[in-house]
Image (cartoon, rainbow, N blue to C red; front, side):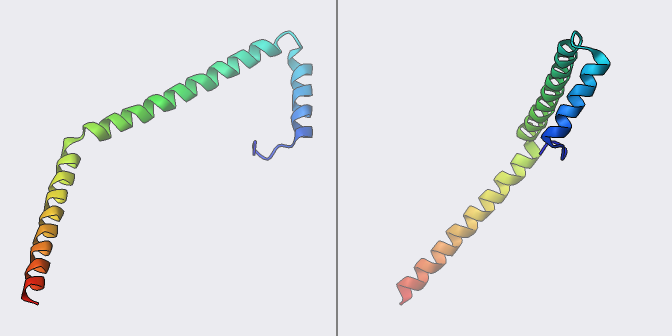
Length: 90
């Protein structure tokens, strides 16, 4: 889905670009557009990696997660002890 543009419309746009810029400049325009798209893609990848690094290195969130996991494990152990004692009584 390329911005709701059909094949015929793309051919028409290419024809207009060919008339305006000429056949000599189209390859250089394509190179420039490709470089721009590559730079945007690299920038977004860098932003994603920085966000991921900040999430991974954030110790406060990891510490809270570890504390919660410890509490959940403790509750599980207490529950297991309770069920074991109930089973023994029966």
